[in-house]
Length: 135
Picture 1 (spheres, rainbow, N blue to C red):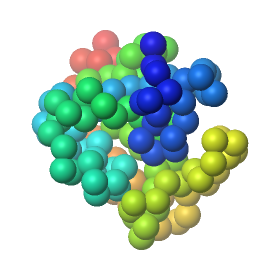
Picture 2 (cartoon, rainbow, N blue to C red; picture 1 turned 60 degrees about the vertical axis):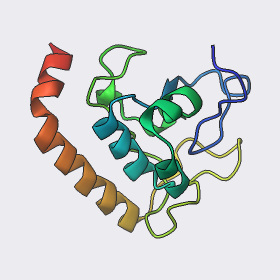
Picture 3 (cartoon, one colour; picture 1 turned 180 degrees about the vertical axis):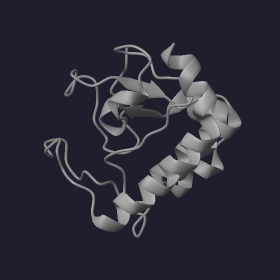
Picture 4 (cartoon, helix red, strand yellow; picture 1 turned 120 degrees about the vertical axis):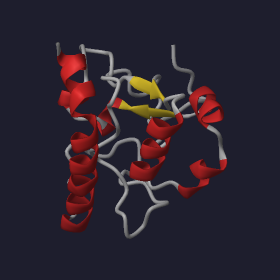
């Protein structure tokens, strides 16, 4: 169970106020953890090790596309946050500024292009993992 002491690193949602979302720990694998840090755009996370992040930081399901899930609650091994993320022009600011923000808040064109580029890089390097995950 997620304690309110571990809100989503991006939007600050907590399980008690938003139980409709799932909350995922940062991955322990260094390369995958680095990708999560990169796409969240939160520079202070770079100061922590993957183990530290795995024990202290979560990202809610609001930041993952449906195709990132191997089951209704479990992420694929190659999953990474890919939606509702901070604008790359302002990397340390959350897209969502309050707990009551609408779930369908849209990213601006620059952010969308940035995340599409990241998605293409990851998809090209993780195709085998995705196929294993979906089988």
